Image 1 (cartoon, rainbow, N blue to C red):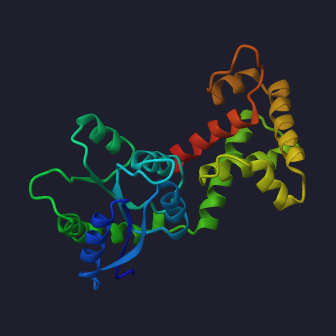
Image 2 (image 1 turned 180 degrees about the horizontal axis):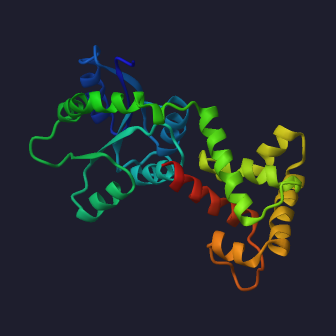
Length: 259
């Protein structure tokens, strides 16, 4: 069983990040500092790859292309096993912002403007909930390796394709499954390039095969199955979804199923 809680700090105020780091180091017998980052993009990649137990997230990030809310949204739209415990640190007094962060998956929130606030309060909170965080990590249902999770997602997508009537013999069938798993893991573009490199195919060949598999499904599948199992609305000038529309539809189904 893990004895220490690994904590990632995502904070662009140097004074705040230094104070939080000092508090973590002062509790080195129970906590370890996973890293200190300033941008949501860096934090997203770090969380996916390093899997810290907890994240202390500043909402008002200025470095990079996104703020703390953007990071929460990315994490919610990605299948992670296990998900980190997220503590929000914010200067905002907005009730709307608080409600939104909860909907996006934040576990707890501290207001920096609140009387008596200190970085020690944040770390003390993590120490209080540490047994539950580590206990959840040890829970068998979340104890999946990345490969095991990908296999379970693949099985789920294939079952969904069978309902819809996507033909296994189409070369694009396998590529679509791979693209949906990539999307669920946070890669929302360049699927053709990534899959092509894996199977020694050109990007255009992969994208064409995926679109053909979709078009072929809409031409040959039972219309009742299409209406029942593909519930995304299509534009009136199209009879079948594009690759991106199709992949993002099933990405969301995967996320809803596994999160």
